[in-house]
Image (cartoon, rainbow, N blue to C red):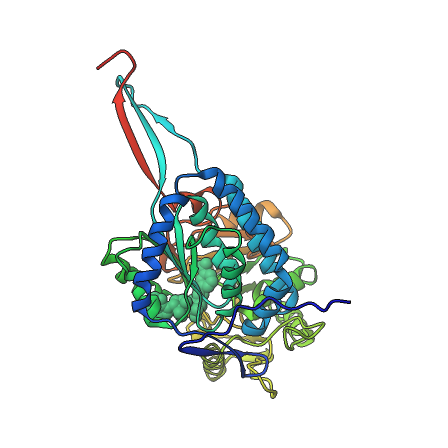
Length: 470
Ligand code: NAD
């Protein structure tokens, strides 16, 4: 029987940096440490490739459908690599790969809108023809490397642009493999993956050959990216942090929703922009809610992402682990009580016990900042108005959710949340076809669905007299 040879991208020959497995804390691979001066060539080639790619929508559809098939065919290798560098359970990596293929197919078939006549009642015939922008720079974080890359590259390429994609230096490997797999389906230089550190990202964001910078990451880096892109006046799309609140209503069935609520906060070890990061429960149900979540947290199977049965992997990297430890110990010092967890696990790798914090003062950093880890503060509220005010009292505005038995009442409360997406009895589910946009510090611009495609197009207008007039 032939043994399967995993697809790998060849090891770098020049300068490189190591990539660490968060389940062991040990380096296991390398990626090229590219410098900003290499970008002139890469972006020049992306410009050349754009000339052909932008002209032929049918070729683009065929190529992007083939790209979806190629991702699926390489799915097992990509998923294993993703789990090793990022830490998430293997099943979640498979889901991320599947989402990547689905998104390529979705945008392949969506297509650029045809010419659109516009009228204002005068005897003229104006028509919008949607045109691509040119080379797009995508800069992405380490929590969902493939899924976020695909959310940027699929609409940008479908719109007729080319792309230079930079993953996080914590998770460059699955993205390099994605680039190599897609190169078999796409014309040369339509997509180039570059790897390196902050200075490479900064140079990419400010490069004069880039027409659109689409960034996902932290608020502070997002501001730096926007400042960089201002130098070339490139279009900017920013998908930034979140500090989503979930509100439980008086009629909620705690036992029924506890498991779903737990995973809405702890999936991907809590490293999700749209995770539940603050929970508000009615005072009457407070002890029951804390207890139900603490039991779930204590029984969660924590382990290496590749180990069968693992539900929660390690935290992805050392700076993130330090941030979680800092926020948690600060909350405990502020008077919070750890109903579950509250500490690192005594084993190699970057493991943190799933943590439920009760009696947390509202001004504690774990409530006011984005902790981005396996830690959930639970607060009691007296009146519903008080809960809504607390949920909206944040500089972020990504998502939020309301949980209860009367769905109409829950939906009415959800309507009062100041954010881009609000869920009832769920948190974080997104359709490929819906718009995705944060308000306040959570972002600028709209991704997802036809809006994601639109964000990569410009209107070109042809304006002429009506038939029979000169
Ligand atoms: P980060 O901002 O540290 O890094 C993101 C990317 O920017 C990386 O590729 C990094 O190398 C690059 N970078 C760093 N400095 C740069 C600079 N000066 N110029 C250009 N690029 C630079 O974020 P992170 O720690 O990788 O990711 C976690 C953050 O991402 C969290 O705040 C999370 O909420 C956010 N996030 C948001 C969404 C969303 O859709 N809104 C999705 C996922 C993650």
